[in-house]
Amino acid sequence: MKKNGSPLRSPLFGTNRDVRRELIFLSAFSVLIFFVVHWCYPSPYTTPDSPDYVLCAKMKVFGGFRPVGYSWFLQLVHAFSFHIGYVMLAQFLLHLISALYLIFTIRAVFPPSRLWLFRALAFLVVTNDLSLYMTTWLLSDSINASLIFIAFAALLRLSENPGKKATLALMIVALYFSLQTRYAGMAFVPAFIISLLTVQPLRKIYVHTGLLVALFAVVWTDGVLTNVSTFGEHIFSAFGGWAQANNASILLPHVRVDTSGWTDREACEAYRDIRSYDDSNFSEKKIFLTDFI
Image (cartoon, rainbow, N blue to C red; front, side):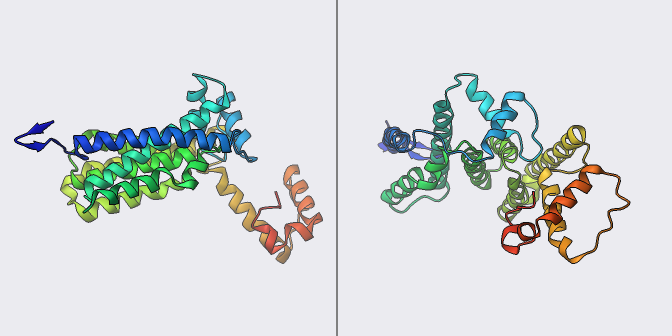
């Protein structure tokens, strides 16, 4: 299609003809990649964490340690099929969509001097071996990475044009669900605010900043309230208690503890068991693996 003798240009990606050609090629190539990955890894990679996600999805409960986002994802996929292959397929599709959104955003915000440079970047992103391998995991890593891709791409677009309401909504939604799959994503909230402030004046992004602060507060408050109602512990994540126990166990060999006044039977039993296996629990090499648990 042409207008005044020039190819029509998309405000996001470049010429419509280039975008169509590249999308068709990348989509077709990605189908081939999926079958190769599925042939190499016909069964999902699992760890002792995987059953926890599945159990929380099945029982619709909060497990304490890990956020429930991945369990929500499993529930969504299993609404269509209980076959484990559909989980891997859904993770791959989300990876592909997020990767394409990110690379075309990079092309729009940082136009390449040569088209082959963009195509090389697209090839490297779509075929990234770690990202592809993560799509075969029965863990939250893959969808968390995909959601961060989407949120970061939306951030780049807002840096160029903060008035895009749909893009702002996409960033907040993607970031919210990424925080619900990995608590480590909380660090992205202040990072996104600082990034916006470096390229736009506050008067143009005060809504963005307010929504990001509110997002952080909502996720934090929800985590604390959920732990209080479920376990009676005023803590954001059970990993916080895990870290405290780890620190305490490291100190035990260096302090004298009088347990005669303890009334908590489980605490007494735990302390006795820990002190019974000094060689494993108090080894500096092993303590970082939290063998004391």
